[in-house]
Length: 162
Image (cartoon, rainbow, N blue to C red):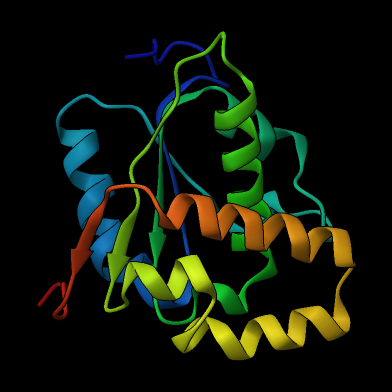
């Protein structure tokens, strides 16, 4: 794993829809990683500047060995999640000199909905196609399709903290 002494190097980068998973699954995952000495990055609202990925977030994605997108019901509503995912896919598929592993997790959704932008992903994508830059939407769809094809974990049931 990467050394945790560098501020831009992480072992794990977690990409997720905060409203859906921050206070349940992501909290549990991040806590477990931290307890085991794994240097993980989760975003905060302060990192976003406008609608582009800020340099610290970009560095966190590029400096991470393992990239974990956590797909949930409202994931596709967030342009920020999609921007991160597109960068994750771009970074992992074009940086052959760096080994990056993408480990997708699907919470309460089917991987095929991610791959094909159906189910809870369909409506948001119709809106994005009307309101967003066509090149951005194309890169988001490509990232969802490709990452949705990867072997991951599908979790059904509520992983909340009581």
